[in-house]
Length: 543
Picture 1 (cartoon, rainbow, N blue to C red):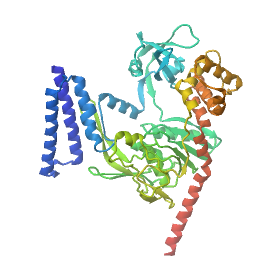
Picture 2 (picture 1 turned 45 degrees about the vertical axis):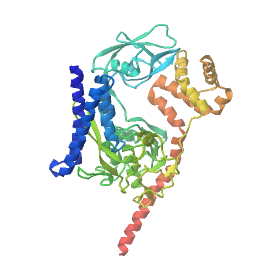
Picture 3 (picture 1 turned 90 degrees about the vertical axis):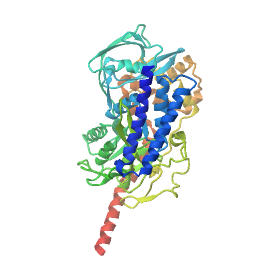
């Protein structure tokens, strides 16, 4: 009872501390508040404590520690914050630790991505991919390996989070993992020494064709701008770039300063990247401090989709407004709010919206969020024509092109998302390509000249029959290019590592190939900008 009471008191304290943070943000000086405001705040807090006391004393079931945590962490605090906006959020100790790990872009462990999979009627923890250069990769662990034990403890009945927790630990410590692998009669034992595991922000960067670079940026964390800079240097080693595709599809954002630093690599020194305006803090304007750093001018195409958000929209908006890049794809998510993370007690955190951010042309790209549920905000999107912008604010780029605010970054050129069909979904739901790769490699090897020919396709069909996965020859023929790419990608991931598997997918990806086709339009942006600047100079001279 004492432990439960203490935990309840701590939870209420966290709630009141959160209210205190909100109060200090709303007005940094209590003296500046009116007596009426202070009285209203006291009444509101008094009402909450009265409700909590009534619940604790009279609820039908006894409130244990878990009930208290749920009521406070999942109910009261998030409920309060979500009435403000969809992005203010409270992090309990577990979520706060995960957020900090994501921002740092590293953790200590062995470097495997794992997930549960139904194998012959039993849920098993399967290795999806060992990250290249990590202890798991160096030891020879492969995609498809099944984790049987960790330090002698059976993985049966454990979920992937529990197994991941067993694999993580201090740097330099050992963990022994036993695996089962198709084609092997006995378990394979791996003695792994834990190490720092980097999470790469740029997980893929290579030349799609001579002179045309491609990079995929997954999110914005502490290493992003450095990784982008490294990729640009590697592109330039052989010959100057003739064009660059930056893939920001599915990028949820992250650290604002990293978005500014990445933009700095493509803009001219002094150009505005983004500005932010709040109520309780001074306005801030972020500018390119170094500029293109001698990388030279080349056309840039940025590929975005409806899940490109926040910091990724800052980069897209900055390069679009300064006519430095052509934006292609779908209208982006539309998150124009900046959260400041306040540390509270017991390793908890409050991410509170403190600023609105604006692109260089003055666009606030935040989507409306009033009078809708969180589900509708995140998952039910306006299906209207993205070119129908009659109710959105109008701004101009440096060359005078029209751009719009209030609903994400509208692409300069639309590229429809490639949607899977029923036949593809069936194969993916059964992990057909993933499981075929480990089956094939149990008796074959592949090199980088490997092609999926008729013999491989026939083996794939035989595998589908053996696994009782329904298909027809017509299904395979109708999706032939996709099937071949999927087979090759998973085989290359298993044989050579994740980079080579992702590269196969990127080389096939219809949206990426379409983005490359817009390189001439991206090149024309510089010409339009020069013409506009010349017209301005001429007009000034005539005055």
